[in-house]
Image (tube, rainbow, N blue to C red; front, side, top):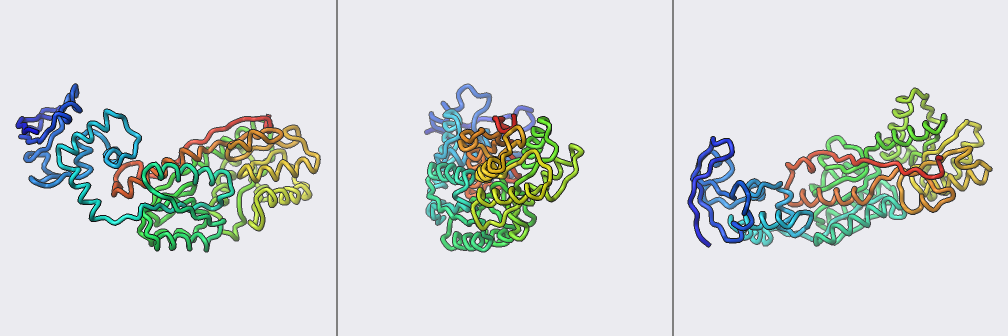
Length: 392
């Protein structure tokens, strides 16, 4: 190691400051060919975040290396998702500034369980099981074990699991919440938390990763109307007695989409189940009752592939042909949608990307990074229509 003393001027040639930097040959190699060098300013106008002798923070390393604080955290914790050149540059700055020693001291001071809580409403639902699979895989790669909690769409059980996870001193929580009352339990825990597949919640400071539900429903309705559909039925979720957030959101965006196209919204065309049996069984019976009521309909928008299986069964039972008499479209696009007869048109919601993004944000929160745009704002991911024979 050796000391370099030189004068640095920023690109606007406004700031001149004397710089003292302890560099290694690795550090110099990392910045070879760049139009700048890493620096540590001890005086001048850049002293607002540093004092002489003060150890650097993640934000300081990020500023010097020209990357985000999240990238610095990922590199120093070997979490992947960055280029080799970025890793070399960040590690060089960390070594030169003495940040590695800080990390070791921090590890001794901070007690962590190495466990993340994953709360989902129904492990048997294909969409939620995929979220659980990819979240666990991502967190395991980052050195964490995962405690999976299946709430069975039960508000009391969901709240109980939040308290249980707090008692287990988990380092963070990823939750797919289904009940409004459960948020009260979450907001009091003080545990880094990221929510998946829900709307923003007042008075709860937790990042959200979700599908752009309004855009997804607009895609579904527009596609069906382009096929000549006049009276679509939507399978929305649980009854209002269950205070289901998912259902109220689905109905809200369905109504908005229908009205945008100049069609009358009729609450009778929103079927909601009580949760006393599986989705296929309950929706099959609900659709039978709807057909007996003699309301005209020519399409069904299913909340999940499991619900769609019940719809296909009932339509076949009463002699209605797909797609000649009734077109069927389902949310989610696993292998189930492609092997039914006929194969189902689906709204792909990308559970893998949703889970990975939620875990990435949680890891940032756990590192104390709260000012990144990704952490501070809700992330609404796009969906995609996959057309198959059920709506041809």
